[in-house]
Length: 252
Image 1 (tube, rainbow, N blue to C red):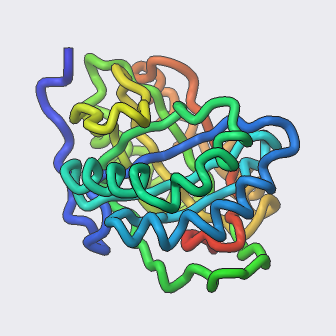
Image 2 (cartoon, helix red, strand yellow):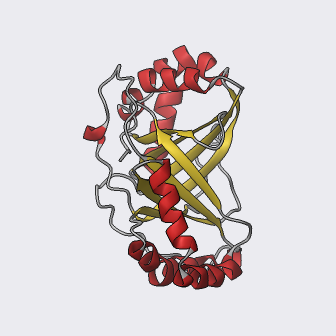
């Protein structure tokens, strides 16, 4: 049973993405750099040419065999059209075998909609052919929510948790909840029958992230707010520590 109310979608600050996919690929050992090279060279502008926004692509610092990337769409109708155009088009046809050969699983995908949208700026993306990784560590926190009370968590986050994060020097870049619409492109599965809240923050590097986490750990306000949150969670939170690839538009 879906929640009877859904949090209001904010007006996207960049006019970019009312629908977002957070995609996490499990790769064969030693294949991540192969996929990153292929992705950064062949799959950025070619996806955007058919109506997608490639927001960022990342190495998971805690899993050497994981590749994470984020793409967005203006709405669900555009998503269907764009995916059909790309995966039925010549670029994917040419490179699909090479890309799929790196992957064990590509179905760990959260379909999301923004509460506070990412201020996407593709001009921050390095030019084609760049191999210099930009600075930054993107922390993505995923809260699996109990279905019956999922609609209450965005308000709790805004009232109780985000102010504590702000006082600790942690700026929230974007906040998302599950997009409940049907996946109209079943050729690319997404995680269904789940409710999540996802929030993203950027740090200078691993040391900067660790310093801010230590500050939170010593915050009584954060402990109290986190304790209040636990009654709404369906499982333990996940925190992804992600380092941008050379051509990620999202970086410090």
